[in-house]
Every structure is written in structure tokens, then in C-alpha cells.
Image (tube, rainbow, N blue to C red; front, side, top):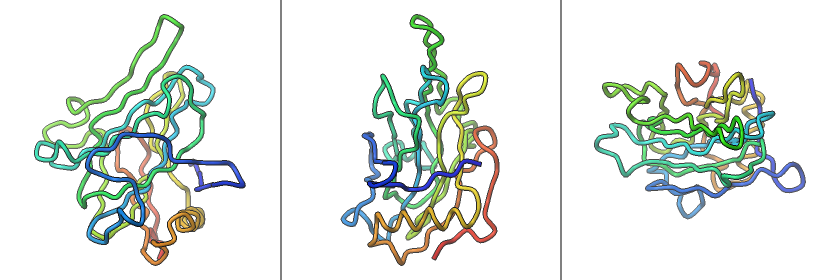
Length: 211
């Protein structure tokens, strides 16, 4: 499966794009607290050979969503006109708990006049309280890698969760992460993917924690 490391100045540049966040701040030494959790996620907003397809929004809401409507993570495309097909790195300080995918928006332009949006919402991503789209969990004091999100650009572009493949590549990935956040050098990082039956393939590591 897809492998993408944290790469910074001097190599290919992967930066933190602009986004909107409610309740959950981006990771920094000031924002970090051992009483909270941290999630690591990467997103590509483009769609390879499909120049007119774009992932525009992802929203994860803390469960149970009826009681936590204002505790959510919202990521938005850095540009609605043109984005590069590369993975951008994000890290958030979050309240411990389970988070459910409650919205996404994929734009696909078949022509200048024929533009469609393939969207997900709470109405079709959550049924009878069950996260049909998928979910992830982060506990108090944990740093958790939940995956790479982008578009599966097959017959019609659609949201898909990818991942770093294998223990060795995960260790390399976390080494680069810790170079960016040296104050977290001694905090273990767990490989615990966003769990989904429809937006990604199941995958886990036998030894999922990098200490």
C-alpha cells in the first residue's frame, strides 16, 4: 500500500496546509498535554490523473456525536481551484475518545458545466449510532497515527484511507515526525488506523508501537 514519509526543507516539501479546526488545536509544544491525545494524519487533496477531481473536506466528530457536536476536527482543501497531488501532514491535540467520520466532500468536474459533488454526511455515515463510514480511537496520553487520506481515482473519484506499509517504514515515518516535534521524542507512537469497511482496506501491525 501507499507509503509517504514526513519530508521537509531540503527534500520534497510537505507542509501544513490551511484548515479550519473547532475544539481541537494543531500540535505544538504549547498545545500539547499528556492529559490529551494526539493524532497524526496526512491528506492529499488532489487526484492524480484526474485534474478536475478534488477532495475538499473531511470532518471527524467525537462520539457520541449527539452530545459532542462542538467537538470535531475539520480539514479543508488549501485551494478550491488547484491543488498538488501530494500528501500534506497534519497533527492535532484532541480530547481522548472515539471519533467518527461525519462528513466529506469530493468534487468531480466532468466538464466546465458538469460538476458534481460526492458527499458524505451524518445521515449516511452514521446509522443507528454505528459509524458506517469509519472511526478512530485515541486514549489519554497517546499519539496515534490514523492513516493517509486521499481519493481512489478509479472509474469515479472517491474517498479512500491509505497507510504506511510495514513496521520498518512506520519507524522511519515516526523518526521524521519526532524530528519535527522533538519535545515528543520519548512519547510512544501507535499505529492504529482509522477503521472502516467501505473507505479502506483493513490493516494492522503485529508490533504497532514505536517507543
